[in-house]
Length: 297
Image 1 (cartoon, rainbow, N blue to C red):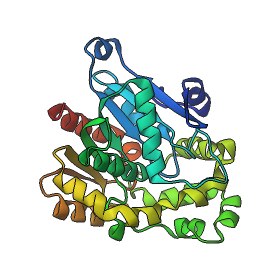
Image 2: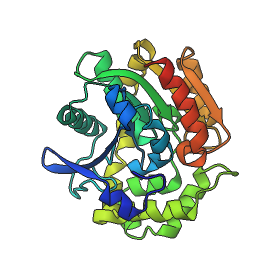
Image 3: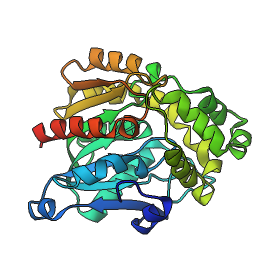
Image 4: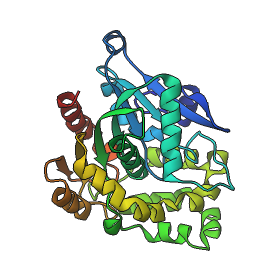
């Protein structure tokens, strides 16, 4: 994955793994120094409705000292997008465990965002309950619905999740994606047109718009598993960090405030950006994450 990959570069650099009956696109990186030293693995889990492409701003720097793995979750990006499918956060965690097993990764740090936060919470809970063979060394969350009662979805998300969701998805356009992203990015860190070009292209890949209503069941799933996840977060020995863009209307300052109440010992950072810190302030996020993971490796 290059510093700013086009869709063509993104596709050309992708690897594919068979997980069950589906193909999952993934990327790995390790510079010579990291490979020789058997450096720790960092697993990056993206959010909704985007893809592993979101991490390109961290990829070049982190690969110097760590071995990296990122992937497009089932239903996203270049991975398979079955249309008639009961998408589940638990299934996504199963997919990640299977992929880690295929790649021989037994221990890792997790860096996650949005939808990926919920998948990471499930993985952390399995780790706490000793239901996984993956040894999680740390988890760093970016903006996401960590606590279901404090998540504030956009009207667009509510409509896509409703019975008229398939109709709404059919008429989604690049312009409507731009408008939605403008609402959730910070006032001084608005989305670049080039970013929207790529993310919309990945959304369109394999007719991805039509699965959006199915993917949005994660909002209800968060409520079901909320107490399990919070219990694990509060009692695990795994180091946790929250890097939060406070201008995010979905999971900004209000989510950070609740995080500090429930996990006062965890590391937190408030940034003057919105819902996508890794795109809005890539250098700052990378530096903060490097400092956190260095201490916990």
